[in-house]
Structure formats: C-alpha cells, structure tokens
Image (cartoon, rainbow, N blue to C red):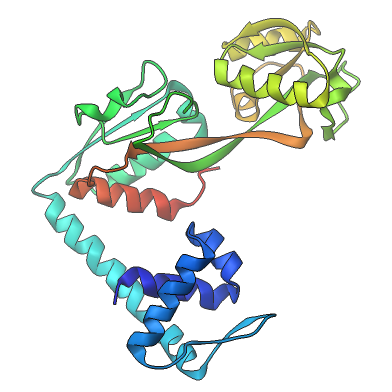
Length: 295
C-alpha cells in the first residue's frame, strides 16, 4: 500500500468531507475516492460509512486512524534520517532568492535550515531578475524564492510559501488615516505613488479596471524610503506591499489601510517539476513545507 494513501486517509478521517479533504490534498474528489476504495479492497472491509450528508469512520477505520497516527510520524522520522545520512555524500544545496525576499522570512528559514543541518553546504545567491527556466537549467540552483512568476515556464513548479498584501500607505493628514479598510473606488481621485515593479502594477491596474476607474498615478518607484518621505510630506498616498512598512524609520506616523476586498499576491518557492530533488534538496523541501506560511 502506498504511504500517500495513508496520508490521504488521515486527512479524510479528520475532515469527514471528501470536498474539504481533496482541497487540502490538492487532488480531485474522484481521485481521493478511488484511493480510499483501493485501500478498502486491500484491507477487505470498509473504512468509512458513507451517506448523502456525511462521511464517518467505521470501527475498522477508527483503528487504522489510531495506528496511522503512530505509523506516519515514524515513517517521516525514518525518511528524514535516511535522507540526512544520504545527504552526507551529496551535501550541497543551492538556493536563490529575489532581493525583496528578506521581508518574508525566506532568509530566516534558509539560515535556520543551515543550522539544523550543518553538514550540508548551503550555497545562497540573489536573483538579478525574475526567475526563468534558465535559472534552474544548469542545475546551479535547485530552489528559488520570488514573488514575480509571470515568466515562469510550465515545467517549473511554484509552491506558495507566504502571502503579501497591497495596501494604501497614508500620512496622518490623510482623510483615510483612521480607516482600517476601504473599497478601491474610494481612492479613484487620490494621487498615488505606485511600485515600479511591473507585475504589481499589472495587479493594481487590473483591480482598478474591475472597479471601473483609472488611478491617478503621480510617480512610480521601487525605493521604499523615497515613498515614505513623499507620503509623510503629504505629496501623495502610496500603494505598496504591507511589509515595506517594516523599513520605515521616520518620525511622522504612517498608516497602512487594507483594501476591501484585499489585494494580495503570493511568495513562491520554485523548482523544476520533472527533476528529482538531491538528498539535500529533499531535506530542504520537507523543512520548508513543515514551516507553513512564513508570514
């Protein structure tokens, strides 16, 4: 029996819903149902009682759920130990990241991994531009972290690891200063400073078009300190990623106002779809996935 079937069984036993379980597992309902049926055929008895309203464990299913709670952690522990041992022979991991990734805990995670596995030689580099297939093609980079994946080829996987939000950054003189959120059309006449990052501009302009207006853009820049100074001086408000405010060290108070509905984008970990991970890479991938979202 495939170990993945046991993992899928555990998720279904926790959710008691094929729909919720399949969403968590990123597989279709029919695929999950087929895998459970294969398990039941192999065991020789049903694991779930099915009705039109709910899914519930049978007595046999409850026993398997209890044992899987012991089996799966032991399996994962054994796998980590085996990969760790094998990584000693191929102990190099290459990771690249876009320059803004320090805001999202990416570097902290890489360095924490390095501390957890000191025998692995972790090579870190910065991406000069948005990652493309060529970033990985010579195998000099096994993983990359970036927010802009507009030029990613179909054979490069992108796994979300954090979520960022575009917000309206305003001064204490702004009428929006006391607001916690606002609908996008409310800033239709507001003079704005916008990030010079193309994919963020596309994201914002698309949302404005959906809301039925064209924004009044006074300036585009990627330098957050310039943005803060201009906003604090009441030149304009700014539409920028929320985490940029971590870099503000001025004396005048600035405030970040969310949009309703929120305008968000993902931070991704990238790697080749059809290339097997190195031993060190497998350890790193599992380590990152166990962290959950960085933010």
